[in-house]
Image 1: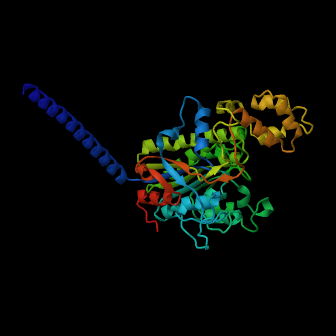
Image 2: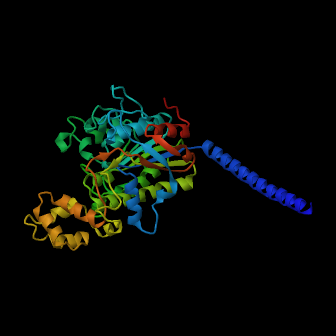
Image 3: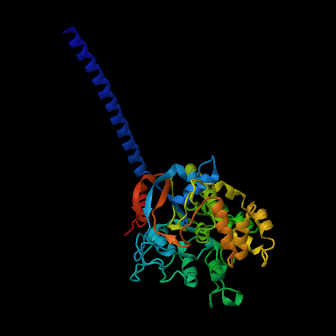
Length: 444
């Protein structure tokens, strides 16, 4: 009997402890839910949308290995995955992907700011502008390129950059990137027939910028920075030019747009991550991702201080079908890419037609002592840059399945108030809708 009583007491005590533990956990869960509820109603005054074009999970993994001990800034802010297909293809292009992420509507590959039937659809940038907020677009491609274009224009073909340039001046307060030729008339070496869009921009209150030095000394609430005739220089070469970095442009855009008391919407694109993927140039891709991370750091630094800014980071699609490891071995070594000093395209221009200096050039620019087989590969090819990229990628144990896009899901990262809106698996059309809800904007 005594033993039974002892056992019963022990059971009751243990049950009480377990129940108390459950209750504490329930209370903790309730507190978490309340925290989420507070976060979900927190004001989002500003949104900084950051798009590393062509960036997917393998690019993210290789970049983490490339960095070494210090993790990429976005790792701590991973919230979900995004489906990327377009209206007419399981594999999207940048025009359709950006249209989906800007307007919440699927469209066909190649189309900008409209449905497949040609009906115009408004972007989250224009909706923010109509609500009185300042707006901006930043890219390292032509500012009229597919991704920024989808936020500010409506054209049947992404190739119509002349028309895109004209529409952009009606939509954004800050425009920073390349593509000056699309704002100048043919009489001045541009693409426009009769329009001198830079003069029109000045009449409409834009301050015109053309160098990094100009960018660092601005005070106007409207700026048009065109730092190169076409696309800006790759990140490898930017420091040797008068062009600003993506970090410089992001910082200047935020500083300018933040003058508006009603808040702002800013889209920043790391355009050439995609181009490096198309070229299967692993070193260039890592360098562009590094430059993009520096820009993300500026955005998050501002958001931490401001406390009313939501930062969303998401690629539009995968480019290249990149692998982590490969070549029939269990190895991955992206860190060697830190020793590469230029793009494969640039290195190829330094190699003589007879390939007699190939070994010396590869040692100088890629820190690689070529094997006999690698040297033969360069000597035998008509596409020297491709051979260089193949050699460098193989040394890093990075494989590629294509020089085009693939249809895989891409990761989404978010920081700031209401960032939990992007938790889980979403379609790319959900992104602007959730941003609109966070900013309390009407988005039909």
